[in-house]
Figure (cartoon, rainbow, N blue to C red):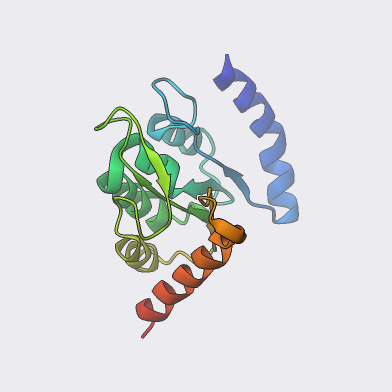
Length: 162
């Protein structure tokens, strides 16, 4: 049912978006339980049905790590990024995954299972030029989690382009 509704909506939206130079981005299902619509298979279905270059993804690194860890994230960044389909990245880290541990925990960027510098190197390699959005930031005393995350991302970017 979801696929039929999605196709109906996107068949109406895609030509209008193209006319006005708007990119349409889909976020993966969060939390990525079995048979959720916007998983790896759902992404492929979307691109098969809508091959236009202005149809792509808000790639949520944490959500996809929840589904399958670092290897899945790196593979998908390589595949979708090479094809110019990553429009924005939600930049978040997790510990554990549903596939390997049966659960996960959201962490600060430097405390999860993924090497976020390696993720950035892969994004650079595929030519990603979109926004990195710190996402699902754990609460820190005084609300400093956002500042910490932005500082961490800026440090990674400085190292990447050094």
